[in-house]
Amino acid sequence: MNDLMTLGFALLILVIVCLIFVRISRKVRRGGGSSIVGLGSLYDLHSKDARRAIETIVEVKAGKKLEEQESSDTID
Image 1 (cartoon, rainbow, N blue to C red):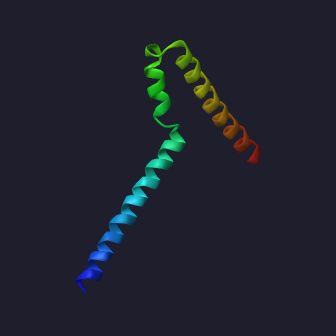
Image 2: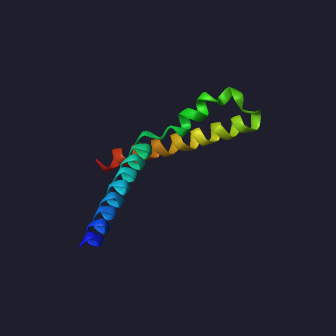
Image 3: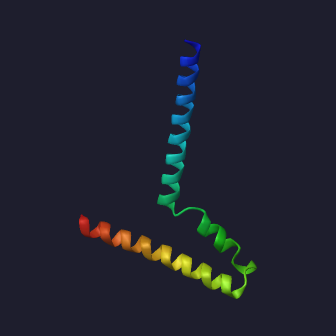
């Protein structure tokens, strides 16, 4: 009986951790994440090549968001 309760408790903890992980990952996807903000705040510290890479990443992410907005506008 004690082993069954321990197993149930471990399973409950696992489910809670998974739910927290899913909730955080959805917030990051919706909000664009903090990685872009971090890249922008450290922009001056990077070399020219790294700056070009950062600009490309930001433009690609902005394009994807724009495409998502356009596609959702056409659905309505």
